[in-house]
Image (tube, rainbow, N blue to C red):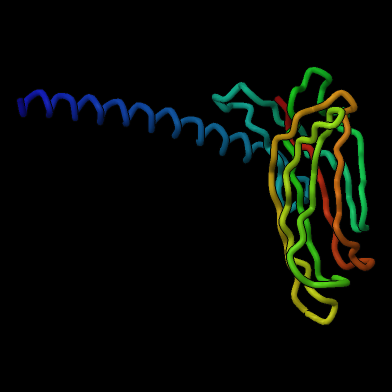
Length: 175
């Protein structure tokens, strides 16, 4: 019996080595592609994943959908970078604050709507008082359905003083 166990373990090790080699090759392809692309002076470069083995989604150049710093309900169209056949949009929400009118945790709601149905994600933020010399950041990525009106809705529960912070919402991809 110990011979069968050893043979099974050997097969498992060989299978694991093959999987590691496949992943390693994909990582090297991505690294090579990243090095060949110019950074354009930005601190980062959105590469996308042209060599990825996951064909279920498509990346796009990050496209700003909305930048918000005032309290209330805001909406913006889904950018043209997301084609009509897209069922879902991958969004990146980034928030920073260094001067709040009040302090504490606040939830920013980001959603798409289909009639009365709402599909949403929430970005939990920490707002610091004006007197505090610190800053806070929060970010998230989320998939939201692309609805017939092709709009993204944001509900900001508070306003941030001028130059005191902002929420940025960008499209990163679709499926």
